[in-house]
Length: 87
Image 1: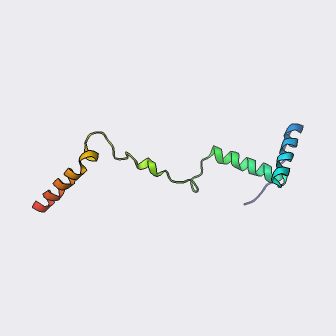
Image 2: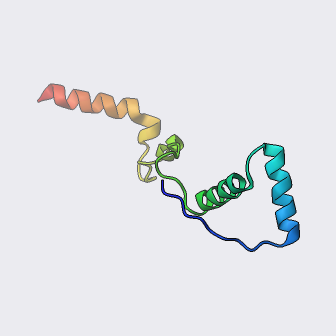
Image 3: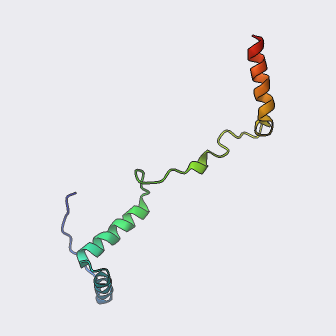
């Protein structure tokens, strides 16, 4: 990925706080700011490639509330098999 150099205007408190954090993490100030910008942008736009699928979203997918299939599925399956057998 291509990088572009940017100039930032920060107040003394911001520079000191970021410098302290970069020392704690043992990374450069540039790396810290780049990491913070990336994290901010990731929060703004949800990732699509790395996002874990929400398997629970399929629960109730076919639920219309119109029938009792979830309660009487065995009976309905039996009726369907009997119907096919009589053909």
